[in-house]
Length: 219
Image 1: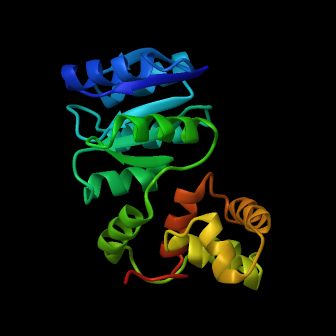
Image 2: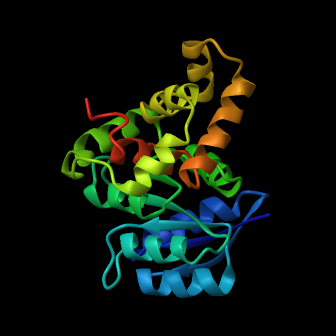
C-alpha cells in the first residue's frame, strides 16, 4: 500500500486529491498539511512513501520543505505539484531534492501513475517539461565546475557520459538504447551505475547534475 501525505494550503485542492487517491485500491492518504513546516513535521512522524508538495504556501514554502525532507535521509520522496510548467520555484524544488514534477492540471490517471512511479523509486517529469525547465533556469547557474563535480564526473566512463547526456536531454531508456545501439537492459544498468557514481538519488537529480557540471548546456 502506497502512503501519501498531501501538502497544499488550498482546502479544495486537498479534498480533490484525497478523493482521487483514496479511490485507488493501492493508495491511502495518511494525512494532510497546509504549510511547509507542517509537512516537514508530519513527514518525519508518519514516514509516508510520497509527499505531494505544493510550492507556494504561507510560511515555509514547498522548496524549503522539500529540502528538509530530502536532507533528513528518511524514506519519503517528494512529488512537486504546481500550477505553471515554467515555475522557477518548481525548478528550485527539484534542485532541493524532489523526485518529480507535475502540473496541477495533469489528468488524474497521470498523477496516479506518477505517484506509483515515485513510490517505486523512479522519477516523474515529462521530457518536454524537463527541457523547458532546465533551459530556462540553468542559465542562472554559475559557470565552471566545482571540485566535487569534477571528481564525480571523472568517475564516469565515456559510455556513461553518453548515457547521461542523452538522459539530460529528456530521453527515455528506450530512446537512449535506440540512439546508442544498446539493449534497454544495458541502459538501465548504465543509469544505475551513473546514479551511484554521481551520488544522485534519481534521474531528475542526474539531469540537474549534468547541467550544473556543464556536461550539457541549455539549448
